[in-house]
Image (tube, rainbow, N blue to C red; front, top):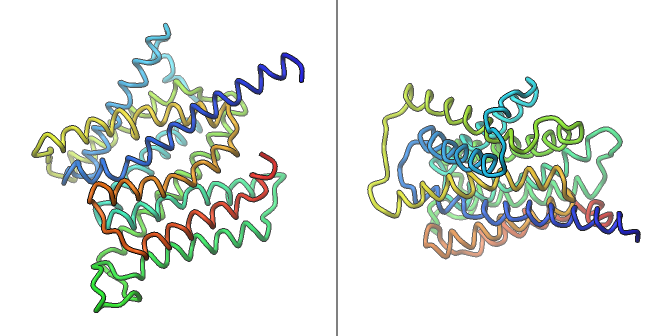
Length: 309
């Protein structure tokens, strides 16, 4: 291996490692959003993304750049950036409000599977049998979550649908599809050099403004009532709804996206462990079977990517 090739490989490895830290931060999203209390979804999104804008702008300024210069982006880049960030997080927070946190969280974490499926449908790729098998496995895990009986009362049985949770399940599925589409299309924009990572700050600010307008028109303002809730709200904006976007963007643009996709399948496991450990969700066998089906289906669907990685 030549020195140039070794340097390039080292750069890719470093970018991949940076991107992987986003997965660790995202595993804390459900617990933090739950601990933030009954803060309305639009208010939560607006506050978190304002903090994310400050985090990104501070990083750009620290490197001698002008954060506002990155507001000059193409219309497709703006549509993808704002639509992806706003759409994903609004649907995700709505899901956490309308369904049990573990179930909503695991359904949302179908996005690594959808990334594999969407990538397989891009020009030059084909949808193969293991993609379909993986999708069926992930779907089975999702159905098991929905049909297990939301209250956990054995008298209701496992094949009981809690109608009140259906909007939450739908929102979680929508958030998964939205983030997968955002990630795949962001990679394509990166290949043509459009909308660099610093531009994510601009997307965050516009998302915060849109969320604030929606909040003022549709919701009553509710702030956390204790120190734990305020700390959770601050950490959301600094971590999973802040720095995570920037390191993930750097990883998918400059690192090994196949490796990042494979590592993403650990996110539902880590997130579920945190929810259970924090006492925010019950610990039962059905949750872990569903988690195994979703993660296992995603790994199976990525078989060709892992072999080539």
